Length: 243
Image (cartoon, rainbow, N blue to C red; front, side, top):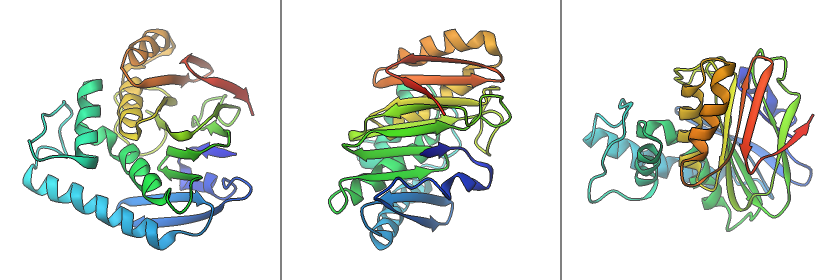
């Protein structure tokens, strides 16, 4: 069982699925929990450093990038992780840094996949999964009465992101009051940006349905779940389960 939550990240203690080895990689602000078929700490550290270096170098030459709450255009020479963040931000209509955690989770997972075809990378509640085995993901929703009681079944295959934003849990910037706003996509960057946008749209229970409709209108979004207090909604390709 994988729990998507934040408080002290205690959910990581019992998260590793049977048959996988779990390990943690922490480099500056990046704090990853990883489950793979073997301990790939060294390879994961190398991956994180490389992707962080690319991002930091781009930010140093484009200082507006890190603080923009609006979509930005890409320079002609941009590619890789930075381009994925810019494209995701433009698709959703928000700043590119909204996609950073999901983008890094995907990049690291795919870097590890040649040695471990089954891999899960969690980056502050944002997941990227690879592998043929179905997984259960529990959705942590803070003080909601539904927290830890609902989850989804996912089928990662060649890659699936499950990213969660919250206006009540964790340090991430949100302009809404959702206890959990979860989005599924093959793209880690898009799932992260769309989860942020979904959370921003939800101020009360009455916003759940229109917010879900809006996020499902973004090309590449597969499904979404919103929890606000004792109310929830789901749309798209989502297989809900009771924990």
